[in-house]
Length: 359
Ligand SMILES: Nc1ncnc2c1ncn2[C@@H]1O[C@H](COP(=O)(O)OP(=O)(O)OP(=O)(O)O)[C@@H](O)[C@H]1O
Ligand SMILES: [Mg+2]
Image (cartoon, rainbow, N blue to C red; front, side):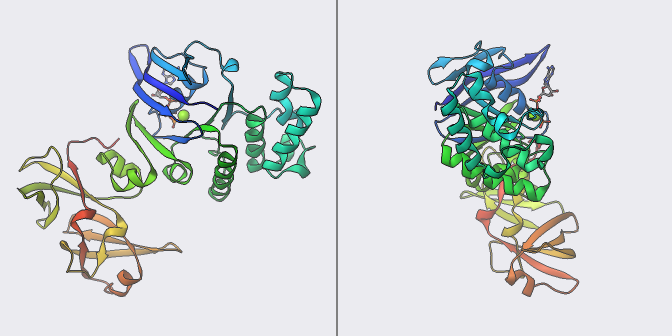
C-alpha cells in the first residue's frame, strides 16, 4: 500500500495541453474518484499514473519514489478498465491466477489466493466457467479479483461499470465499495457519472478542461460548490440570472430578469450592478411558503412522479423553468393548476459571477 502524488503534472499533445498542471495526493487506502465531463483529461491522468503515458512535465510519485519513467509492469498496480477484457481462453480461476503466475508465486500460495479472491467476489461456484459464460457484472467482478489477486499497492479503474445497465451498475458500485473497504487499497476510480462518484468516493476530484476544478467530499462539493460549473455538475441545480442591485451588511439583493428580487449572502468578488447566476437546489424550494427570506411567485407547469419523490416543474417570473423536489408538505400546498408562492432561505442560495463558464 502506498500514497500517490501528482506534482504539477502536464500532458501536452502537439500544441495542446490536455492535462494542465494537476496537483493531487491520494492518501494510503483512500478511494479517490476522478470525475468530469468527456474530454476533461481523466483517462489521460489515470494512464500517466499507470505508466502508459509519460507526463510532459511534472512528477508522479508513489510513496517517495518518482515513477515518471518506470514501466507499468514494475509499478505494482492493479487495473480494471471498461475495455480491459478477461482472457477468453482461460477460466475464471485461470484469469484470477494470471498475475500470480506472472510473478512466479508458488502453486500452493496461488491456489489459496485464488480461493480467497473467489470468496471475496462471491463466485466460488463459477471458478471453472469461461468469460463468455458469465454476465457483464460477473465479468467485472472477475476483472476486479484478477487486479487484486497479487496484492498491488494501488488500484486504478477507468469507467469499469460503463458497459452495465443502471440497476446492475448500482449493485456493482455497492460491491466495489465493500471490496475496496475490506482490502483497504489506495484506489483511483475514473467516471463521468456524478452519482457513481458520490456513491463510491472518499473524495471526489472534479476535473474540467485539464485542471482540477474542485476536490472534496461529496457533501462539500454539493453544499459548498466553488464555482457555477461544480454547482451544475454535482447534483441538480436551478439557475436564476440576475443583476446585483444592492450589497449591504454581507447580503446581496439580486433583481432577476423577470423583475422579482431575491436575497443571498454577498458573493465573493462581485460588485453592485454585476451580472450573476444564483443557484438553488430543487429540495430547497418550498411550495406555499411566504415566511422564508425569499418568496417568489411561480406557475406550475407539470409534475413527474419518480417513486421516492415528485418533481414539480415550475415557471418562475415568466422566465426560467425550474424544478422543485417536492416533499409531503409541498404536495399538500400545491394548487391544482395555477400560481403558487415559492419560498427559499437565503443560506440555500449560492451566487456566482455570470461570466463563469459552465463546461
Ligand atoms: N494521443 C492523443 N493525442 C492527442 N490528443 C489526445 C490523445 N489522447 C487524448 N487526447 C485528447 O485529450 C483530451 C482528454 O482526453 P481523455 O481521454 O483524458 O478524456 P476523458 O476525461 O477520459 O474523457 P471521457 O470521459 O470521454 O473518457 C481530449 O480532448 C482528447 O481528445
Ligand atoms: Mg476516459
